[in-house]
Image (cartoon, rainbow, N blue to C red; front, side, top):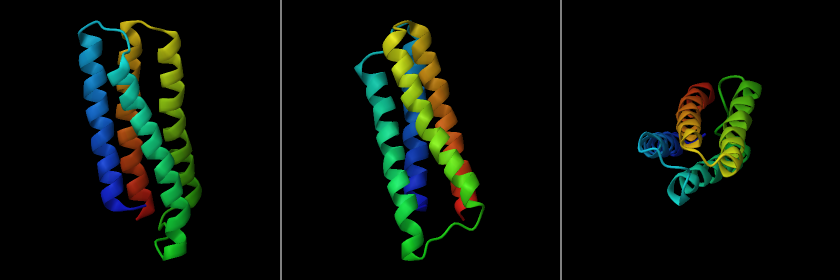
Length: 118
């Protein structure tokens, strides 16, 4: 895992969490901004999967348990996908709150992945 990419992913996830929380506090339903932030996090996590596959071939192998890293990464990817799908179905303000919690969870899980990797 690349350190600067992990830090960027954490910053993006925290920014998306703040955006979704503000929209939830304003009692708005999910909109293009909150769903776009969720899509951005999902795409960034897919790129992280590609990086995690390629990194050991370039000599950047994980120092921690690889199974634990991959489980964190897979669950971190499934969270925004599932929450985004749910937000498309449940068009209430509570969906934005769920998206905010999911983005916060992705930030914490990404930090844990950085710790596991090295």
